[in-house]
Every structure is written in C-alpha cells, then in structure tokens.
Image (cartoon, rainbow, N blue to C red; front, side):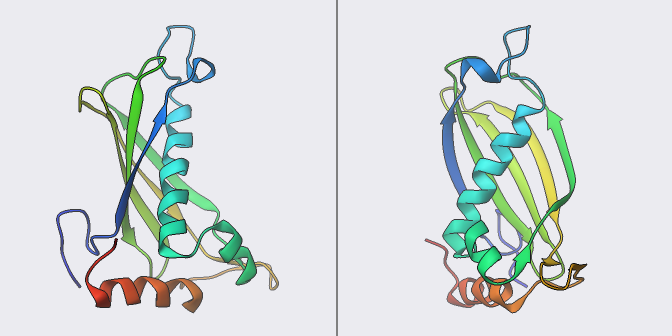
Length: 150
C-alpha cells in the first residue's frame, strides 16, 4: 500500500465554501452540526472526482449510508469566512472512510478535523455489504496504479 502525506492512497480534494448567515448559531459562529455538512460538500466532490458520485453509486445498485462520524472543533468560523475543506480517502476496500480538515481560507487556521465512515448497502438485496463493490474499488485501484490523482 502506498503511504503518502495525505493518506495511504494520496487521493484527496480541497474545495471552498463561504460561511452563510444561516449556518450560524446565536453566538454568531458556525453551529457545530453544520461542520458535518461541510464534510459532505468535500466528500461529494472527492467521490465525483473518483468517478463514483452518488448518482453513479445508485446506478451501480449501491448506497453508502454514513455509519459513523466524528469531529474535533479547534477554532470557529464566522459569517462570510471562506472555509477550505479537505477530504482525504483513508479506506475503500471494506468501507469508505474519509478524513477531513477544515481551515479558514483567509488565515490558514485549522478549525476542524473529522472522519466519516460509510458502509456499502446493496439496494436490491436490502443488505449491508462487508466489502465495497467493484464499481468503486476498480476506480480507486486504477487511480492508485497510475500513481496520480489530478
């Protein structure tokens, strides 16, 4: 397995979003639950770049519900801040596991770290799977074999 700076496969993406007024809590900082939404923005962008976004999953007969999420809050984001969200693929064979870093894009300050885990679910059979489907694993393995993710 390739061990790289950004995870075992060096498959990651960075995206940005602007913090909106409706993301704030009464203390005028981003409500803690909204950081999970920011994880989703980056995770979706990474899956799309891999070629296995949510529509591709459904076409292949699988869903990937989140079964575990964690977040560590280090600093706050506020209205009109730009958040730079990095999603890093940590595991893809038996489950999907992503690691996240959220930074204030203007200052570079790390505000949040987190992880999500998703399990493959065969839609037709109505059953959880203990390995990911080839529709996903073959795409990831092609990226690993080529040694670059652009």
